[in-house]
Image (tube, rainbow, N blue to C red):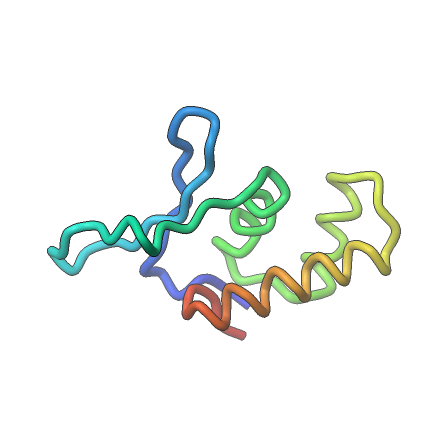
Length: 89
């Protein structure tokens, strides 16, 4: 799994946002994507190619969460990123 390279995570004030790069188009703020700290952590993990098992392990190492909870968080978040065209397997 990895990001498709067209998006970057940025922190503006205390808020993480996902920004689409290039294209020369103005920003469409109606489609602005904000993520919480956990989402930002997962997004950062996907900046380099990573397996689901590695992602689950990273989440467990960062947060006090069991494997089932970490796997659910990883699978849910990655599925949403894939749906939005931000990540791919």
